[in-house]
Length: 378
Image (cartoon, rainbow, N blue to C red):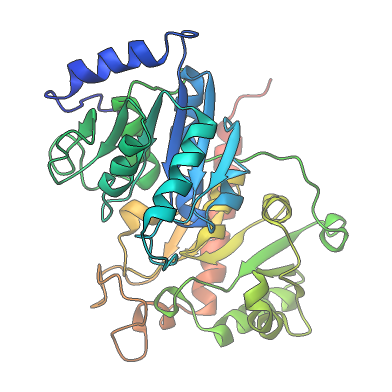
């Protein structure tokens, strides 16, 4: 874990301090709204920052978009999850008008935050949400912005200046929380985490040793081919290892193809909490750059990450100690943020073989055994 930067916008700091005093006068610790408006995985990687805020807040409202809200409900430290579809988030596609602004004002009035911490990735701006928070009367707002925020942010980190550009997403979010005045407790190592309060489905509960293969991805440019996933399931079955194939309700055709007769198909059959339980029991999870990769990291399972370089692995690879990253990170599609692969044949991932995955699995087991051996007996 990188050290935290507690640097805010020096021009805004005095106002920020005075607003915090006024806002929290009713009880010492503030009510805080933490916002992360995009996908399931984006919300999961905000988890350490949410816990940092929770350590110093009287109440934490987590504001999520429709895709991220199910992940928010899994995070420790959250008192209330509120869902709001932001018009500037790609998947939302809704107009911004007076009705949307009134809807947002009502939500904020119901939650009564003393301040807000806006969490964004490197390619996003906190300013649209900061403007609405100001209009809704939130007295103190913190975020990271390349653009000058004027009066929209009280605490500002500047990406590329006092906020490094090459941080893993959980560390970036922690830096923003720390600048706002919220730090993790000394006994919190800052790893991803989710609540464990649901059992896996009966079809998995008695399996013993098994591997999870998750073939889906949010966009084609991040997906290992379905036929190679299917061959992997067959290879595990031939080695006597049970395979559970997971996926969303919209991926049932894919999971059925990949599972074939050799795997257990759970496509569309698990809630997020049940999926977490399934992942937690696996020997290894094989997954691309998609939300369940971050869920696997949060439950502490070893991960074979089939990672396309269309986005940087330094930011978005699973944030966990036991990860084997596969995929050509120097491929021509690197950092393109493409949804469809721009290179014929999708070579960054198609060149990853089934044997490459099996070898990575073995390396993970070896690393896990060495970590266990290094832990002193109680």
